[in-house]
Amino acid sequence: MAEERPGAWFGFGFCGFGQALGCGRGRQVHSPEPLRAGADVCCVSAAWSYTAVVTRGGRVELSGSVSGAAGGCRAAWAAEGLVAVLCGGPGPEAELQAWAPESALRGEPLWAQKVPPEPEGEDGTRGGEARAGPLPLLPCARAYVSPRPPLYRLLAPELRARRLELGAEHALLLAAGGQVFSWGAGRHGQLGHGALEAELEPRPLEALQGLRMAEVAAGGWHSVCVSEAGDIYVWGWNESGQLALPARSLAEDRKAVVGKATGPQEDGRETGRAAAGEDGAPVAFIAVQPFPALLDLPLGAEAVKASCGSRHTAVVTRTGELYTWGWGKYGQLGHTDAASVDRPCRVEYFVNEQLQVKAVTCGPWNTYVYAVARGTS
Image (cartoon, rainbow, N blue to C red):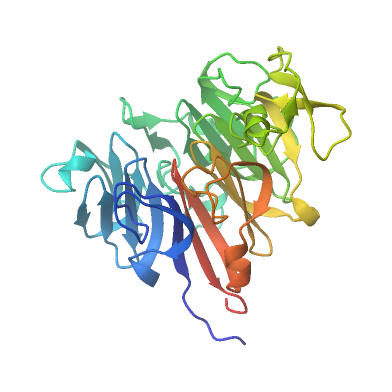
């Protein structure tokens, strides 16, 4: 059996506020670098201007435009308006605290609330089929944290939430049975219901009925989910190629467009003409994708995890490779440059370093990755 060795967290992208990336203010990291906190990092959550890092010893550390630290914690979730910290537990002693980030986790929180224990499964263990995912969904899977009032929001008990993700204006919920619900603003198609109207209450995605999903991820104005079979579905805004669908802005940046686009159609498509390297046939550029579209990774790779930034997307495959695409201005794609791409591209750093990616979490303009040496558990 191979010797077990701890993995490490890496980061790349925007660190202009001196965030948890291994760099100082005003610099972009275009290739993965180990985090300053080293192998002691348990999980990472990034807002635009700061990052919250949770260590294995239960310490939360803030870095970026704000700084601070607190002990006795097991999870944290960073948003621009607040940082949510889960203290104690698991069990009835767990408490959720919401802090203003500039408080540096000192003094009194904005509010605090005891968190009920996780639902008990049929086998008597905590969690069961409805085992809750990370914050902002609470361990009880009956409520979640919002960066805007009301900060503590209850969910209908029949939803039996397993994971919840918040975008800039919308929410995605993965139910225990693998069904996906969305609600909030829909003007960029990010709800996936085929229209651009808002939804005030969670609504199931009819296009995914009968498909069991294992992961959901909400970007600024786009959405991604991964099925139990490893398929990827994408929808929402594609301004920077974050859906890995043809984006007109990227084609113009590559000076590969000739002629004039006819403008956006009712379904969000724009018709233009591609030049170099193509046969001159019209190409459909996707501005808005209002319903889930199936996305294939190169070489038939299967996905297991996904995360979204403001306008970029990252996916981990079953074999531990990382693919990223979308907006790349700050190096958040990890391809050693600041280019944006509208197709899945493998991050070669982890391949070259013989590292197997296990987890990924995107901040708005950066990306954090947990990886272990290949051949280890």
